[in-house]
Length: 317
Image (cartoon, rainbow, N blue to C red; front, side, top):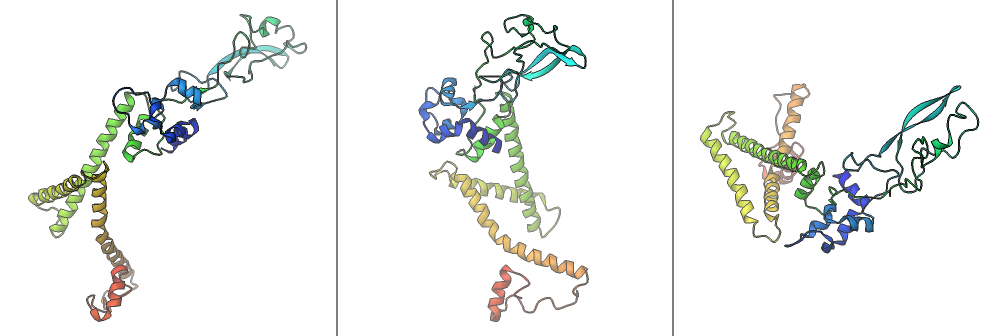
């Protein structure tokens, strides 16, 4: 997600998205979502070139690598080089320049000294010659291609997207149409399995607690708690469907989960204190036969200590 956002910022997609001009989207017919401006695929190639939505690398990009994004195109440059007292033929891979970039194969004039004298001829440095070994790029006959490359269609400005949109937009950037669709389906199945197994585990724990800690509670009781938990979630989703926001149902479900989980926070305080006491008893720091509490928890005469113990067990009582 962070990499995607950086690509969108650097290429200018987010700049266009913040302007929120939906008339620039290439969709035709029907209503156009206000979020369409966040997708680079909605902009035409002409608009991208005109407004600089893309990259200006220092070399020509390889069209066979990620549809022309991410790696420089290389050229196998075979030329004559001096090795000791000999002039031998050698091959080197060089990056193909673009725009006004320098020619990595440039040679202004033939050598007049050294082993390659007389071996490298004028034909070897003539850009128009079929037997040339130098000056392959940036000439009148072979001008360098422009450096600007329009941003790829898979880039999305995630800043203003919803959480669910960000997840699927990120998956869509991992490959072309078809492969990304498969990833979205796999992601949806994984999410369903996650929530189903989480709900099943939660209902099973509630079932064990209601069965007084029995590790294998009765099956009818399991069914009851599973249906009760599912019905509660459905009721919360149905209660939020009339809210102005389309995700009001999910917010209602999340709020109910947080509110219902608040009382268990204090129970965890007491469990943590019990664990500390247990460890100290096992280590012999305190006696197992000691007096457990200085006062009964419902001693209203010491109500300040009772309130303190409610949030800090073992301190106030």
